[in-house]
Image 1 (cartoon, helix red, strand yellow):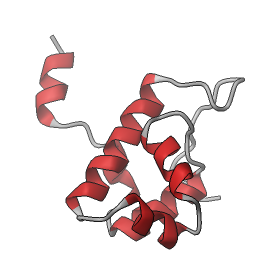
Image 2: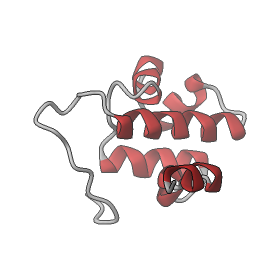
Image 3: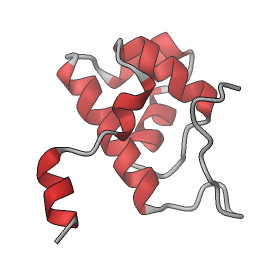
Length: 94
């Protein structure tokens, strides 16, 4: 497992949290920017379309290994998944 990121999991590994929802939304947005379908992403990752859907909806958090594969498939850095847009950052500081 890569040491670039250690995700803190709750006792219930599949618990839906704000972090998993935000991560899933970010993956979906990046996939759409690349004009890639869920099927195309699933094929590149070697997983089912339903697994991609579950990740994008934040119902399951991808492992660090899966995040690396998703980043490679989308041709982005792993850190791209965790960037906070400036507009959101300004709002959260108030």
